[in-house]
Length: 531
Image 1 (cartoon, rainbow, N blue to C red):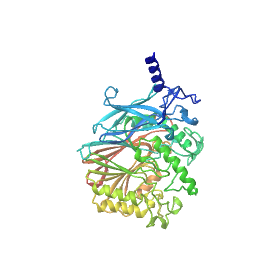
Image 2: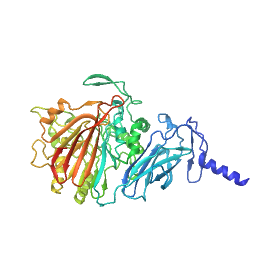
Image 3: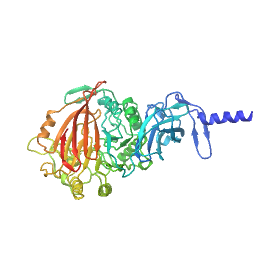
Image 4: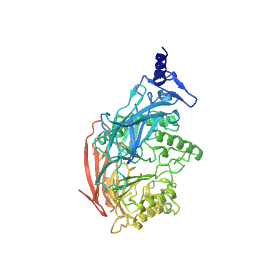
């Protein structure tokens, strides 16, 4: 009788949780002197936001999920208590050969998100993973470790994606990306947009109906941001892309507010108020991304610049061009430039990140050095005609730090630097000179700009306006204005970028094609050409 009672108590300890009045979860709670852990019985599926992996290293990666049975409700269907989640990593996709497993605690302080830093795995090979909580089990995701540091590597193939405004289109591109068998995905930012929900969008073409609306108003609080991430992450095509490969993520502006820099927005919000908004947004960003604990925010600051290395082939330097940047010059306008773009005290990366990057570049022994970042480094004259215009929210609006960055590449005698960029909602391929209007005989680096997943709707193949811009900018070699993503196929001798575009995103069923392949030879930054 005693043994039966012990078994029953153990069953309750493992599988029940405290009744909290939620329609999605019920049971009992275990309290100990150390902590209270809820062992759940869910009446709705708790893994509705999917699973993800990221931050791969030679011996592991981060696996992520967040429990949210009712993502849009107050409390999102979870108790105000820690909840146990188990996880498994397997060497086969059927999850038969378990090589690592354990328990994690989903805590209410972090929205019941889980970040497991898996270690002890073999380098340069795929693994599969899943989670369970109570009687519920997640789907299976695929991740991959990086090669050993300095290991000779012949090839890396990865995706570049971002700018996925939910209201502007469907995530068809993510579904195609999930089939690419990528070694990793670099997400350059604008993972969510902070705008309030709308039914009609006013554009140059006139009023157009929103494809699918945001839930709620513009987001400010931690619960606002959580609901917005939940709405994006419940998209099954985005879930498929996350489950297909490990991601390296950085933010741009819309994860917090349009065109923010340092601790200010563009609406003259009092600093104390905007810092609170940053704090909420940064916590929500961490809660929903497969990041390590080293990136957990402290107040309104968060460490996201870092480096990943792929054997002896690629040094991937992930940069933050928002958090340490001085305010945009010329009132952040789009028009004729002012003297502010030549401000000698201007910053894009900030002194600490800039020193860190110079040291990483100076010590690099890899074949390719990559600057994986957010805003365009090409200084394009954006308006045909005699007057010069710039995108002042890009590096072009910050002439001093831009020149300093390119001079670093020149002084270190680096001849195989690739800059990967987003933000523009267009595809670009071009070359970097200290002054793009007066290019030297040989460029210092090559820049590939990836278009948006959905932002700005369907787009067009080549807009007449951008064609006129290309005619006035010798450094710009090719452009396209459709939606999609980029695939980078990198060998020791050549960097090839494939621009993948969709014919439509405002309707489901868009068709993908490889619109252009552009390549540059190792050690020859002036060799950018179509192949």
